[in-house]
Amino acid sequence: MHIPRAPALGLLLEQPQFGSYNTRVEDSNAEIRRRTASKVTEGAEDDGEASKAHDDSTTLKHKIDFERHRQLVDEFKRDCIYAAMRAEEGQNRM
Image 1 (spheres, rainbow, N blue to C red):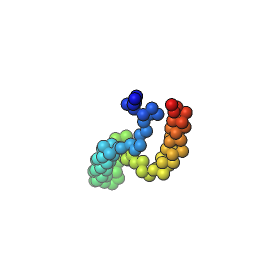
Image 2: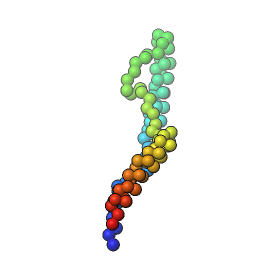
Image 3: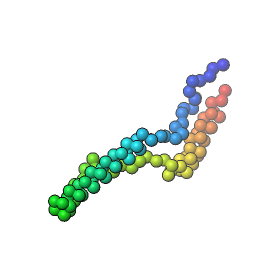
Image 4: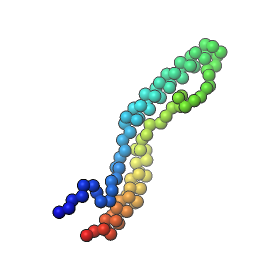
């Protein structure tokens, strides 16, 4: 009996994980907040107003979290992905 090593219809990424990335984002954001607070303190001492310079190294980043989109993701999987997989499975049955 021939048993394929991978599913004939491909693979479905059920739930992506971004734990390591999100940890780095939290650490980076904490460092940016620390530096920004330090600049505000220094700016207040110098001229009474903090510097408003902005660059990419001081931009806070957002963590990746698909849970807030869980309902939409589940609906898409049910209506599009699973339906297409069932249709193809029905056409290719031996």
